[in-house]
Length: 152
Image 1 (cartoon, rainbow, N blue to C red):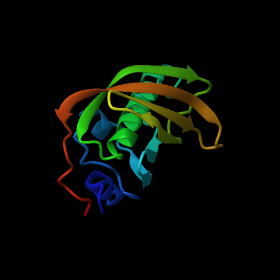
Image 2 (tube, helix red, strand yellow):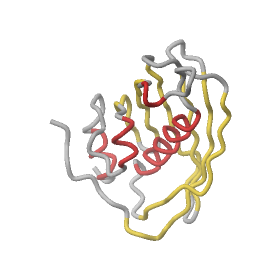
Image 3 (cartoon, rainbow, N blue to C red):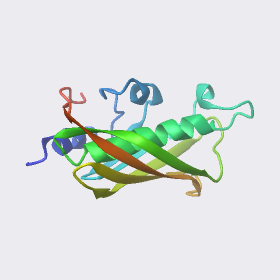
Image 4 (spheres, helix red, strand yellow):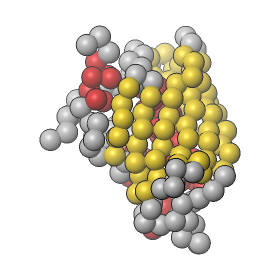
């Protein structure tokens, strides 16, 4: 397979992605449901430590989920340079209660030499869109990191 990063990520499909180099991603404890080049789908359990005072998924947590999944979708393209977020624009539509599972789906819309555009949707258990984000990532021109650990 030409895209080694995609090949490595595909090994995690159906597993919790605990070997991410992102500490925020480790904390989220998401399960990769679908991995394709430029497209990632993940499930996240809404834990109590992710909620606002109303026991609903906190807006800041929604932003973190979306930023994490946008970055991972871009990473799956196998680009040799590391890209980082320069903006994240979110529409908050609903929320999700503690104990529920949300599904995040992220897709690379366009990838250029300097800028990539990625979007992410988060759905609740009724398949209702609770948030939508668009993000631009910029090329840092640093060599991208690679995964080295596979799920057991």
